[in-house]
Amino acid sequence: MAEPVKLTGKERLRAIAKVAAIAYKASPSAVIVQFIGSLIDSIFPIVVTYFAALTTTELVAAATGTEGAAERVLLYVIITALFGLGLTAWGSLKQYITEITRFRIEASVSDMMYEHFLRLDFWRYDDKETKDTYDKASRFSNFFPYAFDRLSGALTNLISMITGLMALIWVSWWLGIIVIAAVIPGFIIQFKLSRAQIAHWNTNIETRRARGMIEWSLLRPENMAELRLYGMVRRLLDLRSQLRDKDDKVRIDFERKYIFKRLGASAIEALAELIALIWTALQIVNQALPVGQFIYVQQIVGRALGGASSFVYSINSLDEDLANLVDYQRFMDMPEHPVGERMLRTSPETLSVENVSFHYPAVDQPILKNVTFEIKKNQHVAIVGENGAGKSTLIKLITGLYKPTEGSILLDGTPLDEYDVSTWHRNLGVLKQDFIIYGFATAKDNVVFGDVTRSFSKKRFDEALEKAEARKFLEKLPKGIDNYIDTWMEDDEGNTGVNLSGGQQQRLALARNFYRGNQIIILDEPTSAIDALAEDRIFKHLLSSKDKTIITISHRLNTVKRADVIFMLEDGKLVEQGTHKELVEKQGPYYKMFESQL
Image 1 (cartoon, one colour):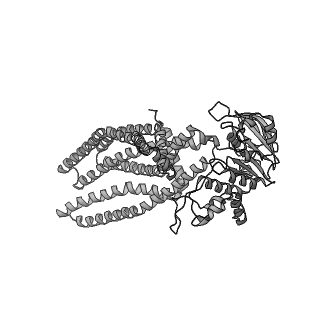
Image 2 (spheres, one colour):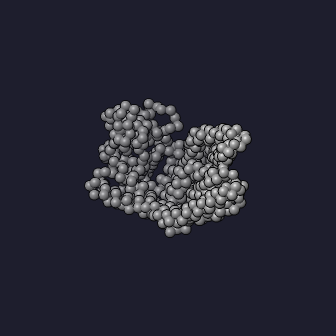
Image 3 (cartoon, one colour):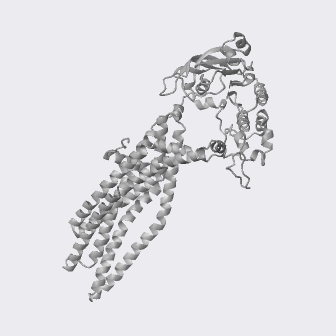
């Protein structure tokens, strides 16, 4: 088991201050009210107990005929009732304050996490350590509002414990010492349990991730056919149960191991309360204390012990959250993708790949090796090669998602990393093999999402559907282009969505790309699920545009041979370039790759 995160006292105080600072930034007024509420929760009950004790004493006095006792009873009853009314009023308001504080804090922290995650260097999305840290940070982020609640509760319990001890010391100083000594065993036990739970959580990240993946796979309708045909349903259900037991059941076992220790700590606290009450009773019998002091001591001892125990539990629960805050902060401190200062105002005349080599972080094996070529504006090029040759990686470099390990990507002679990459992306329309279909949206939205920077254009929309050959199947949907494209979605009229075939999904994604209408179009195996004849027609539409720069990755000869220039990659190296005719005549790697299709 990995060592749990251990916080020093200074680190713990700093973490508490950070939780409070984030909460205050999210909702200052709610935090102030919450603090005032902690004072009310901790002080008012003691005041009520004090006046209840006075009331009891004066009742006894009134019964024996003491002058003025009856009037004082009435006064104390009224004061007690007023404080009780205040507590009731606060209890009604407290729920609202808690909910609004929790909402604002959760929204603020969640927004910061999402925004930071989406601005990280692209390589981090493939990095296991980043994913582990993100999982831990997400846990803290999701429970941050409850961490603040615990912090508020810990403050209330601390004040209750201190005021309770002070009230006991007012009766007898050694009663306070007994109570303090009684809560120490419980503190130690709860602290050890929290440490063990934190260690277990940190060492089972992958267990929970695997379980989540299995649950996701089991609930995807498109997976059902293969899962049933291959008899995988029961296997995955059993594996899910094993992973659940490995995680949740072990944490429950921790609780079981500490049951008798907790019972022992509770017995010590009960003994301390018994001693306090016996001492108070003897003092009253000997007339050293008034009768009302028995109720006073009983309530205050119970409140002090309860406050101390609750404080121990709160601070240890909070201690677990504070340890998770370390992971949250580690994630939030990850550097974001640097943004260049230059703005790309117009589409470049040339895109140059100059002596580019690349390997993925933490992997020494190079994917690309000293690749050099140039693409001119409005040129149609194809990048070909066997699987694993580095084609898709090269696209990631050209689009600025990754930076070359060596060499440069140049736009009109200027390194790409000197530009604000978002201004480069505005010039690109990219359709990859793993395109996105937005199941929560309609078919129309899935196309229009291609350009969210401008208002809707029906002309561009119609042209996009025609070029992608998507109009016919969309018109056949129950609600046409306004139909949801996921059976899990339902519109206001009760119409459920539909599932599209793989080819239909690709046409919809192509239509999105055409609707975007950018000057540079990058297609990475965009029509693998579309039949060859339909692909041929689509590319005729696409390549008929002489004012577009088109970069295509494909294994289909009919698509590749239309390119103005073809770049052949082999084992990460550029081994050939030229027109289709030139490369066929050479009978080199290109010819051998497409020989069967030729």
